[in-house]
Every structure is written in C-alpha cells, then in structure tokens.
Image (cartoon, rainbow, N blue to C red; front, side, top):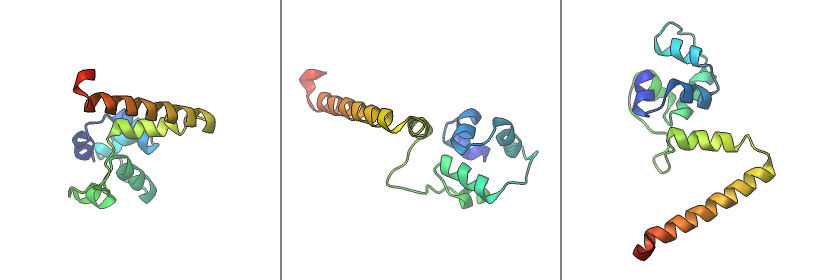
Length: 113
C-alpha cells in the first residue's frame, strides 16, 4: 500500500483524507501493525489511489480508469468542492470553467503569452 501511495506521490495525510480514514490507521496498515482491513476501507483506499483493490493486494499495477486519471490534488479538490453548498459549488465551477477558457485561449494564441 505504501508503494502505491508513494507511486502516486501523495502523503499519508492526503490519502487518509481522500479515503476517509485516520492517518494513524493508514500508518498502521502501511507498517503492517494492523492487518484487519474491511473490504469497504480497502475499496476507499483503492479509489483514492485510482487503482484496484486487486492491485493493492497483489502489487500488480492497474489504473481503474485509463481514460481519465485524477491525481491526488485533483481528487482532493473535487472532494473539497463537494463540501460546499450547491449554490457555492455551482458558482465556483462556473468561475473555474471561465478561467480554463482564458488559459486555453492564451495557450492557443502565442501573442498573448
């Protein structure tokens, strides 16, 4: 599990937050001081690492979705976005989409750089 986390270049704090578990519990899992892991928790950790439960258990590399892979910062951004109320979330998404439009315009127009 630690290898997968390091591969994803995320800290224990970030993975714990994404998976909804405590850092202490994650640390014990990684050092094998705690081995009783529920299927639900394993699934949460796999989802947070954008991999499969099989990959965590066997060590085989496997992304669960090859078309769209979110890194840890993107996952954390989405998780925090979902903590906002519906109106605030909609406003923030709209502003973000406008910002992306501006950045794309700049990238496609060498004179704007």
